[in-house]
Amino acid sequence: MTAAPIEMPTPNPALGEPGDGVGVVAVERRSFSRSDSDLDWVAEEIPVSLEYNGLAHAVMLATPTDLEDFALGFSLTEGVAASPADVLGMEVETLPQGIAVRIELAGRRFDQLKRRRRALAGRTGCGLCGAESLGQVLRDLPAVTAAATFAPVVLAGALGQLRTGQHLLGKTGATHAAGWMDALGQVALVREDVGRHNALDKLIGALARQRGDTAAGAALVTSRASFEMVQKAASAGMGMLVAMSAPTLLAIQTAERLNTTLVGFARQNRYVVYAHGWRLRNSEGAS
Image 1 (cartoon, rainbow, N blue to C red):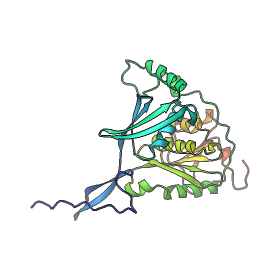
Image 2 (cartoon, rainbow, N blue to C red):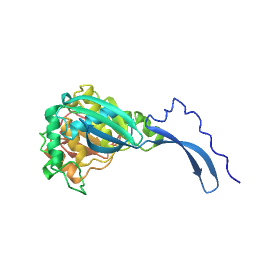
Image 3 (cartoon, helix red, strand yellow):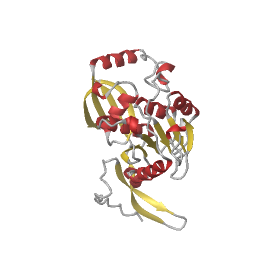
């Protein structure tokens, strides 16, 4: 006997609409004793093309939310733009194959981007596409000068706030988040994506668009901390990166070099400090 097709209901607006980073699909929920047809929310993962002055530069698989934040954050953390002022305009277009974000870049920065891309002509099999030398992977960034310090109890409270702000994760269970903890320990911004780097780029872009003081707070991420994550945070002037999972050795070495406080395995009652722990005061307030 053929089972009747499942009728897709109109999604509850309180849960979010398909297209807002989530979709709805038919599933079977199974146990050893039964099988039930049901509906489930899933996170969207869509090819997003970043184009500068008509030149395609990168295609990322990303959750299609906060794409203006993503494009600006990516431009800043990858050195395409030196400041938000270098991004003169932006347009997001949905195409049959994915989404194109068309960015108008200041002329001098676009000239530099073209020279960088010409050096890549004819190459194949790159692991870090867009970088033609080790020096461009491990960029020569200035050490972070942020002096803000935080009490551990403030960090614990912020981690709890971060979880409550993960709306896509609550619906789908499939996304990472990056949150911004301000000087008072409040999580003022949260951005989510299926990609951990994308989530951090979205957060950095959102802060840049709001002209937030990145030296006065800390970034919280739900993923592990790779060296790229440390480098992105440092390039935005963030003094502290707090990860819920482990860092890599290169991430720790990069944090040491860039004067970035790096915290891993962060929970509400414990954490591990890997670099520059002076930004986390002890209970008496000493460094």
